[in-house]
Image (cartoon, rainbow, N blue to C red; front, side, top):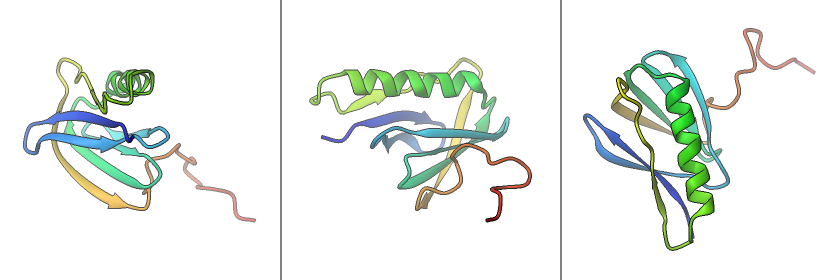
Length: 108
């Protein structure tokens, strides 16, 4: 059975994100965070996107993987002062994975 992370947003209500085999996050600015499971990427826009939000997402993933298969949804605790205002979705995993650095991946 699939597991999902649940995010409460200001403008989109509650949003469910499929964990699949695990999620990767990337903060591009204090107002933007991307999360991918390798299949789809969701881009969050809001305020105070920080490591504490990533820690909350990781804690929710651990809870989800350690819970019964009957408990399909794990709620992400949004840190105090952080808001998720809007989301957008991209198929194919997008670019939310680990940052390759300013030069990008090395050419062969």
